[in-house]
Image (cartoon, rainbow, N blue to C red; front, side):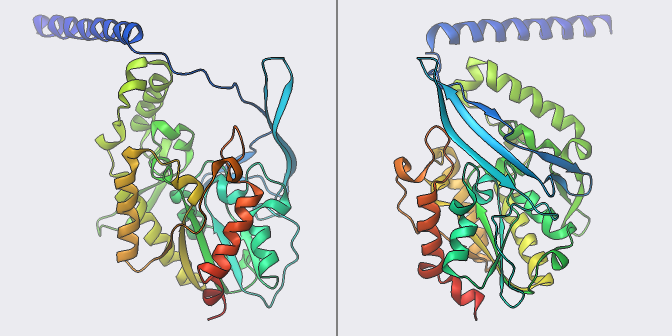
Length: 350
């Protein structure tokens, strides 16, 4: 027994030394990552935690969010400086009046749906309202969140009492990085307080608490991997994907969407639509293309309305510089495509 512990200790020490040597060699041989602008921010996010839902926006809130950097001359360069407001139901609002007779459009997704970096008049929900004045747009997008949060919002919130009309559509803005957020990946480590879904004895997904409570050991492991990804040259250059050790993030994402569709359509007389966001599609890493296409194929085969394309993205015009979120121009063009090119009106007025 003594030899066993001795040998185990020697193997551990040898492994640590080997890793340090390998890291040193990588730093000598491989080039350092290119220096990037040091982005600073003020009052960017203001999320609260609900133990039954996970992260939510602060309700009835008004705040000013600012993102900027200091240039080589020491001058402050503004990326954006905008005001956000939320209503009592923790949704971003852009000053619309409610039409009790009009159908609803529920927007779900992350910061792209939320309208990060944009004034009220530049958001997608405002452009949709301008094109279809009698609709009611309710924005449930939240910075940094994903499919799993959308499902929990639809499942656990009292949406029928938060939404004016029973008729309408739900639009989920899907991005290639959402599958990482759905599993609390080291690449999206801030999502470990998001909901966790596991399969019950019938093989159906069910809520089992938030990630860092439902699977604490894995959450700690992911935090450690996230720290290494930020410091280790080996991890940076090899791009090790530890997520695949535990999850098929793409199949899970498709299952989450299908459950969200079922939950929404059981509560409303409406249609659930998935929109593959064009701005994120052009930034998708090659390693994610096959997986994302698998998600889209699974959804289409299950009868989900999936909308792709619609705007030929030019990031110099359609993405906020030094940030990447959609611009006002993109949202205007995308709203026009959704309403006229993707036949959104036919779903709202069947």
